[in-house]
Length: 469
Ligand SMILES: *Cc1c(COP(=O)(O)O)cnc(C)c1O
Ligand SMILES: [Zn+2]
Image (cartoon, rainbow, N blue to C red; front, side):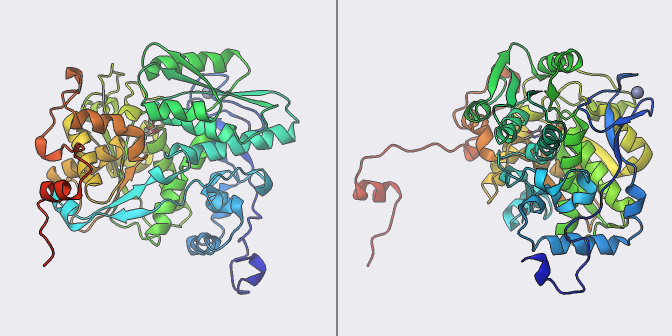
């Protein structure tokens, strides 16, 4: 539908007019810095930065119900720049002109209800928000859409002739970065990803290669790659695309905005279950709900439950012990979240201590539970990844501990698609896990192909088919 055909009572902000004054703000010393630059840590104290909208209070001049209506009407528009995460333009990055927004089909992912069998297995009905249905098949596209739209805006605004986008990755950030950067002018933009050798799945390695990025593999784990790109971002002219880049967090908030909209903005008793790796996602999800809450778009904050594997659970340990220490990780099937020292941890602790308080919980699950959570969900109509399996069994664990209110509506985050993590499914089916994973496959969940002769009668007898009368 084109805006001219809307009813005259339709909200006036259908095509966003609002533009904000935005700055980088240090979460440590509180200093703020001009937004028209690429910046990842505070030049004074080296703490993390967040994006501050200095015009945020203007959004409160209209009631929350008004913004609900704006977002609901925008769903009917066919304007590409407003079809993805920028449907929530005013809450994402309201300095970018619509023409500079890169839209590759991200966001607007479905929530799918658990069927009766899966609900029985977990202990209650719930919804899976399938972020595996993004263009590079993970939620990372949400943040990449905002970060690369900003790069596009900066290139035009300052007539930049040369730019190198780089990220370290557990696999999905690099797939998303390589995809979005590949949309920009190759004469100007180079795309580089740094991966821990052997620690990403074959599908994840193939993605940046297919997008034409320069792929560099180094020995070690993700945390080692992260140190190197931090060094590069500190000392060289590169554009960092990890979630340390606060503009990515802006885009990732859309996950919360979509859930709010999909729940008709009724967030009372809402529970959202998410995996935690580098903690960018959970930060963005909490910030998103908080901003909708502060502007009256939703009337209550949900309960956010972060889930981690016992092989990489620094956030769970922080909640249990009351102090934070980085840990060294052990191999995990939830490999995209296998991080011992989450970069965004200071943001998580800030949000939890100041706003979410008892509305944030963290739970550990075992490797065996994670892979079987994935297999169980996918045997009942879903296409979740191992991290999705992690949230599904995280919900089960939370129910066992009686942490979920009776009448709650629960949404679990499947952060990527089943197909990215096929190798872990395969290792389960073939019983070929190295001992460090501590996974012991059970017959009833294994499934392997049968090789039979090309003969209808043989196949019929194998399947014990009954002859037609
Ligand atoms: C990146 C990623 C995570 C972890 O998200 P963080 O923001 O690092 O906490 C979980 N699942 C998938 C599929 C990912 O790609
Ligand atoms: Zn600072």
